[in-house]
Length: 430
Image 1 (cartoon, rainbow, N blue to C red):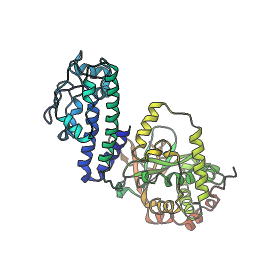
Image 2: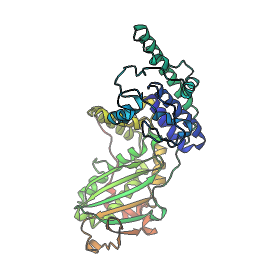
Image 3: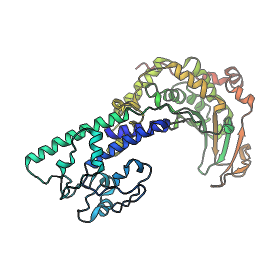
Image 4: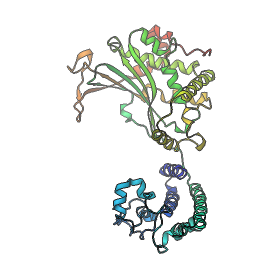
């Protein structure tokens, strides 16, 4: 896992720093050299681009740095050969050895010293442990020497990984908007097969991985999607316009993320869909004025931590997968708890996100329903056909005056006075 952490970090940073490619290659090369040092004697690597006769693996993107050595892992003297063992034990055992036969993984005869062994000693600065592993001496002194050698090799591997990873100079990911600019400020309506009506108000914004301590989008989602008295959800529910309302980060990648407000509409609400949209944007605008407070942020963070502390443990395989992903985005000491911690309140950061990205001109509204197949039901003419799944749909661009209204609190209240019932959450007395 120690090596995996730095590998993931190096690979992620190299994407945004092409000059670091060589350092990345050296890092991966050193790590896999260490892996191979724990394996059996193997034939010399093939020429670049050639496949391995034993493993049937063709080296690809890193073949020029001799990473093709990972394909040469097994002791051909074992019964059945490497190919049979790899098929029986799977890819993990193909790299790390199957664990059968000699527990030290030793070959019956010492292999000829080759280039990778010399490279190993140059990289790690310690005596190669392979000579101890290859010894057929089964005495206790031989065993002790092997253990000592293993310890030296492990320490050397850690030092090598750190020294190589230190050369990687990364940059923050560049923001790449998810949507085509011509579609921003549009309403996309389509026919869905399941019963019901769904409204998706989707904003695009830069990835918030680097803001893991403040988590501004999670805080915004809690304010928008909360179910406290006089919340957006409660007011719309009282009007019988909606079944449910959720706000959350729908997709998060290195270069962008999508923030989504999903509303399940009633038959009554679907006829007043633009009032629902207006209510959402009214809430966003009043949030900017006096909803962003340190007390509400701290209460939100405490509740999230309590929820996390009371959760049942995940399956080990699921936890391992999650932690491996977290290694790419959290410091080592927060790999487990980082996603559940709200360490710093940053009013400016939250306000800037709302001002810059939570705007009508930076979103797409998706509106789906099940009763529009006859083309003009509910006033909708689904005049286009999606070519792959033959789904009827239409795209409507919001008018400039409508976009301007959605950011004007006074104009929104003039259209619907009951928007004034929407209030921020009150302090939690507990």
